[in-house]
Length: 471
Ligand SMILES: [Zn+2]
Image (cartoon, rainbow, N blue to C red):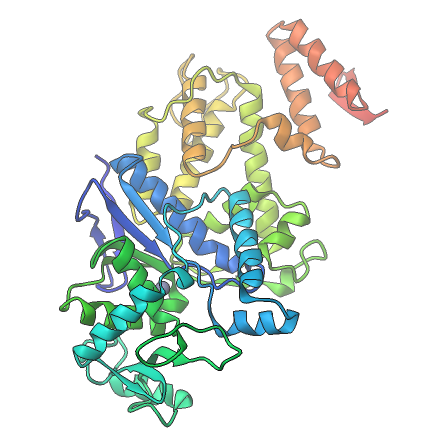
């Protein structure tokens, strides 16, 4: 079995992953607050933890992983958006939740197994808050319930912040009903016109942090294998989740591994007009950027590193995928094997703390070998050993690896013809036709020429090779 090692933020070490129960591996990722279209930066954790779920399923079995990610569908920004449009909050949350999952589907991210809604977890949140009060970790004041941060000495262990610094940093949140500025809200009162639920502390609504603790307890258990999210959530959100859950569960850890993805920054100075200041996933897709290209861009850097988003990055990823699809187009694949021995180095790269840059480089190296039109061609450094007959096997490994990461989901025809103005598919077709002619497969060569002609492309064979023009 492939060993998986993951960098755990709590211990600041890369550790061997050992599931609590190998038959039910639990992964929870903090999801979106749904009041607007998702920023491309919000797609990064969704794509990164989708790759982690794929790796866990590859190693432990497709039905051994429970992947949960929440949707926050009650929050002040949602309420403001509903007031601005004069509609119920459900109109806002349903619209943007649908957009979110549709956008992610086009990035190759399936829906998680469990998608708890905050509004579907209110009784569990109220029950957990009640237990925290009973245990002396929380207190009610003026319709609010607050977590007593200075009363729990382990607070701050994840982000490694000293208590006095956190209290000083929270001064902006000072409120008369708080015992300490660092105390955070578990429950708050709702005005009559605001959405609210009855509770022992009056009609109100939950604070944001408590929902993840209540959802994890309800759907996954007191201690889970892996908790994921953006590094921007480490403090205070994840500190607060830990405080709530551990104090509600006699100190049991909330998660054995804490994984955090780095932030995405916009390289605005490098943006051309084609990208401009477009930052939402939906707009990027509507401008014609393919989902697989955006997915590749999000996985091109190691997940813990910052990622600079630019149109250069998008163009590089498009060219890289074109190369993969071109290789797919020129070689017959009889069978796509996920167990080919060639996959070992690819899976090992992913198992090394989800090293996607190294895993993608493995796919490149498979493609370089499989793509070679002439087996007699000299090998380059870094190429896999090539023996006649292994080309299609190596290509099958490349395809299996790429598909495991969510790529090569289209046929080459769909991929290239989707770009009407793009010459790449024409070049790919000419390459295929010349390859067929070299093999004296004239029916295939004639068919490709006819297909190009049907698209208004005329070929001309000359001493310098084949050129093309639009009719
Ligand atoms: Zn959370």
